[in-house]
Length: 458
Image 1 (cartoon, rainbow, N blue to C red):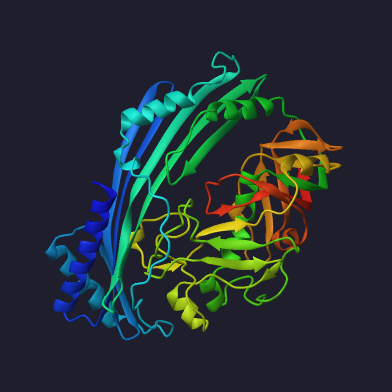
Image 2: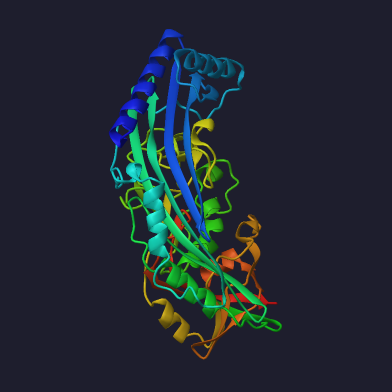
């Protein structure tokens, strides 16, 4: 099935379901139809595992005034759709009123759609194995320190449609491609895992991924104990800086948390919360990002929102209901399934980030290292990032992907260390926001960054 056929199918199901709702005399209805095909292939020592999947279903909200009911189904036949509509309607009848709810999206308005790669739906296992073979070139596979190499290629394609009885009928499509190579190396009892990847909305070159992963893994061998506890600056590579700052940003930018008074930044609107150089954008309209859609998950056009500008908190991100509850508008951040996944059609919409971007500022990673008298370079995603205290901002994380810096030079890799601090202080203690940026596997991108005031210990 082509992308055009997917769009035609999901719009057709949406429109038909709205007609069924009218036949059932349901006062107000929202229909969300989701279709996403995926293929995941891994090659581990020549053992290939290929898996295809299809997530397909309908989520329905029915409203009676301010009472809302939700139900979902994986069936597209008339009986299943009418039964799901009736269930959502019956739930609405017995639900308490939601004083924040003021109806579904009332008109069809769309913004820019992201890049769609028409070749992705046609990729088969044979093509993906060839991509793995390309990843397997350009490195020394005879190195005795190499234990294993695993290649993976993942593709998805499909989209969703959204319709309401108030006049909205729109859709958005997606294609994604990801490839990664992971190596395990060992020497003198020291064992390290390293990886490199590419991802995007279109097929990407995969040459050099294994060579990059191999170099990082070998450079990390020979790790030494840190030997004590000390307050030091930490320098973070781009891909590691992104998830490090994600926890406070995801909770701090939440418009639902702001309205419901559980957001730790709920009283800081218009206040300075970061250093002057820090500007943060929620990006729903860059065509290269997966987050770029013509509509969000409740039918509002996606947009670009500057949430923090020159260190000042300018706005939160909202879906329709919470935006109106705050006497504002939706910022196109209606999300289904949660930030970290979940099946979209099985969930009503909530608030979530699109792709958060920290604006590039100055010195690259090498320059930041050169300016560090003594500190720690972080080259892998730590464990425990999302266990921070949401109220106080205190965190304690661990990593075995770190290097000691002395007098502007990388001295040696380190065995497992802990990094402790407070996020509220961390955002005020940003030393450098870098000029270099790599793609991230998270819904946040950041350049390399340097912070001061973190406690490092074995």
